[in-house]
Length: 93
Image 1 (tube, one colour):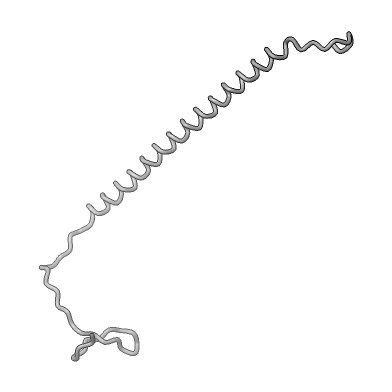
Image 2 (cartoon, helix red, strand yellow; image 1 turned 180 degrees about the vertical axis):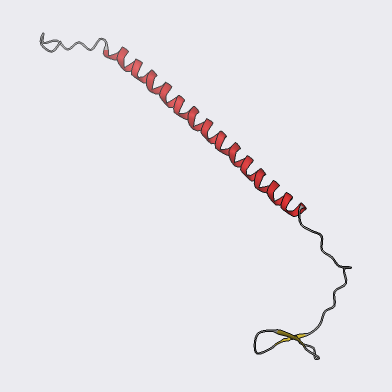
Protein backbone atom coordinates (compact mmCIF):
# COMPACT_ATOMS: atom_id res chain seq x y z
CA UNK A 1 0.00 0.00 0.00
CA UNK A 2 2.32 2.67 1.23
CA UNK A 3 5.33 1.25 -0.64
CA UNK A 4 3.52 1.36 -3.96
CA UNK A 5 2.46 4.95 -3.41
CA UNK A 6 -1.31 4.34 -3.40
CA UNK A 7 -3.55 4.67 -0.42
CA UNK A 8 -6.01 1.78 -0.44
CA UNK A 9 -8.78 2.20 2.12
CA UNK A 10 -11.23 -0.19 0.50
CA UNK A 11 -11.35 -2.57 3.44
CA UNK A 12 -11.47 0.17 6.09
CA UNK A 13 -15.23 0.66 5.99
CA UNK A 14 -15.86 -3.03 6.46
CA UNK A 15 -13.36 -3.19 9.32
CA UNK A 16 -14.94 -0.17 11.06
CA UNK A 17 -18.39 -1.68 10.64
CA UNK A 18 -17.17 -4.93 12.19
CA UNK A 19 -15.58 -3.07 15.11
CA UNK A 20 -18.77 -1.06 15.65
CA UNK A 21 -20.80 -4.27 15.80
CA UNK A 22 -18.38 -5.78 18.32
CA UNK A 23 -18.58 -2.63 20.45
CA UNK A 24 -22.39 -2.57 20.27
CA UNK A 25 -22.53 -6.19 21.39
CA UNK A 26 -20.08 -5.39 24.20
CA UNK A 27 -22.16 -2.44 25.40
CA UNK A 28 -25.35 -4.52 25.28
CA UNK A 29 -23.65 -7.32 27.23
CA UNK A 30 -22.38 -4.85 29.85
CA UNK A 31 -25.87 -3.35 30.20
CA UNK A 32 -27.42 -6.82 30.57
CA UNK A 33 -24.80 -7.81 33.15
CA UNK A 34 -25.41 -4.61 35.10
CA UNK A 35 -29.18 -5.19 35.02
CA UNK A 36 -28.76 -8.81 36.20
CA UNK A 37 -26.46 -7.78 39.05
CA UNK A 38 -28.85 -5.04 40.16
CA UNK A 39 -31.79 -7.47 40.13
CA UNK A 40 -29.91 -10.14 42.07
CA UNK A 41 -28.66 -7.68 44.68
CA UNK A 42 -32.19 -6.30 45.11
CA UNK A 43 -33.58 -9.81 45.65
CA UNK A 44 -30.82 -10.63 48.14
CA UNK A 45 -31.67 -7.41 49.99
CA UNK A 46 -35.35 -8.45 50.14
CA UNK A 47 -34.39 -11.84 51.61
CA UNK A 48 -32.09 -10.27 54.22
CA UNK A 49 -34.80 -7.80 55.27
CA UNK A 50 -37.35 -10.62 55.52
CA UNK A 51 -34.99 -12.66 57.69
CA UNK A 52 -34.37 -9.68 59.98
CA UNK A 53 -38.12 -9.11 60.31
CA UNK A 54 -38.72 -12.79 61.04
CA UNK A 55 -36.03 -12.69 63.72
CA UNK A 56 -37.77 -9.75 65.41
CA UNK A 57 -41.16 -11.49 65.24
CA UNK A 58 -39.81 -14.73 66.73
CA UNK A 59 -37.97 -12.83 69.45
CA UNK A 60 -41.24 -11.09 70.33
CA UNK A 61 -43.07 -14.43 70.35
CA UNK A 62 -40.49 -15.84 72.78
CA UNK A 63 -41.07 -13.05 75.30
CA UNK A 64 -42.77 -14.06 78.53
CA UNK A 65 -46.05 -12.28 79.20
CA UNK A 66 -46.11 -9.63 81.89
CA UNK A 67 -47.57 -10.61 85.22
CA UNK A 68 -50.07 -8.18 86.63
CA UNK A 69 -53.74 -7.38 86.84
CA UNK A 70 -53.37 -4.12 84.96
CA UNK A 71 -53.57 -2.01 88.11
CA UNK A 72 -50.97 0.73 88.53
CA UNK A 73 -50.60 2.96 91.54
CA UNK A 74 -49.17 6.40 90.82
CA UNK A 75 -47.34 8.19 93.61
CA UNK A 76 -45.48 11.47 93.89
CA UNK A 77 -41.72 11.12 94.19
CA UNK A 78 -38.83 13.41 94.91
CA UNK A 79 -35.17 12.82 94.05
CA UNK A 80 -32.96 12.50 97.12
CA UNK A 81 -29.49 14.01 97.33
CA UNK A 82 -27.87 10.67 96.54
CA UNK A 83 -29.92 10.34 93.33
CA UNK A 84 -32.45 7.80 94.57
CA UNK A 85 -36.19 8.40 94.24
CA UNK A 86 -38.24 8.58 97.42
CA UNK A 87 -42.02 8.85 97.83
CA UNK A 88 -43.15 12.37 98.69
CA UNK A 89 -46.21 13.33 100.69
CA UNK A 90 -46.86 16.52 98.70
CA UNK A 91 -47.75 16.85 95.03
CA UNK A 92 -44.60 17.07 92.91
CA UNK A 93 -45.98 17.95 89.61
